[in-house]
Length: 233
Image (tube, rainbow, N blue to C red; front, top):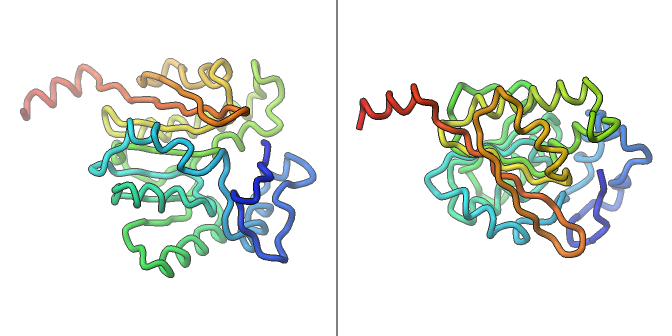
């Protein structure tokens, strides 16, 4: 994980801890995030919305129900709301992040965004209930201390697959998983293209100098689902 030093990306209280921990393994520690979110007002991983808005608009429209994984203290959900997306749910593992996000939205009079404490490795939602699931830098945390990027540690693979399986389960047919990441396609595709998934994959890059990756994975409709749909239309 690499933290950007651009001051426009973050706004922190004077008593805040250094956003970049001494060891990358701290990113795997829930206590690190609770302590950080307790004092940090805002931080955007992998640039703010304006840098990839043109890509988002290709895949999300106002009728979609959207789930954001690992909202932290990002303003992504507010940016999506400003773009006309009103069915928004955000989750984070940190109760501190969730509480502060709820307060921030309440202070702004925003009532259309649900913010819940939940684990992306154990998503508490029914099957096929979201049109879009989006994450920005959240999955990258799972790759901290993952070893050889061509052959990650088995525990890393287990966690990533558990997350992807949950996302695939809660997406509606034709739904999309948007992953905004540091991870390059030749590494991510090893996991995205596992046989258990039915989605198609496309990706783009954004950013000046250092490129970030914008993945859009669309869940394919099975033959059985197509037949059921034809019975109702």
